[in-house]
Image (cartoon, rainbow, N blue to C red; front, side, top):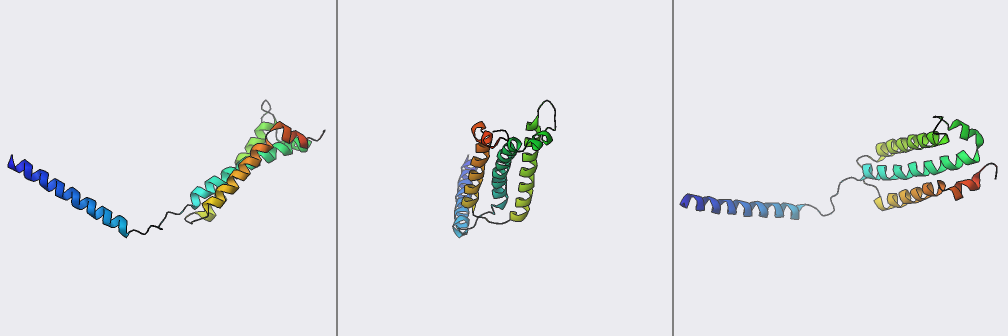
Length: 139
């Protein structure tokens, strides 16, 4: 019985000293140390670029009749197959390029977020019929 009580006291002491050491380590760590956010920023901005590319290809499909024909990669799907394919290619290219440039770097995430959401909004706007029909070749 005495052996068990001694073991418990030793375990409590060890836990307390470990907690103190962890607290001391955290206090010694600079508050301004942060991880690089370049890879995450690249992914976020590339998403905005991809959305904008989808809006742009939708508008171009209506504005340039020859592109409408060229965008027909899969017959039953129509020009949607080409629009989405090009938007994905542009998104992947933007993501790869930005990730290569910003990998391991700290970037202004607020600025990147702002531009990402602006591009996302423009891309969504370009996919709405009242908007892309303004650019229709026949009207």
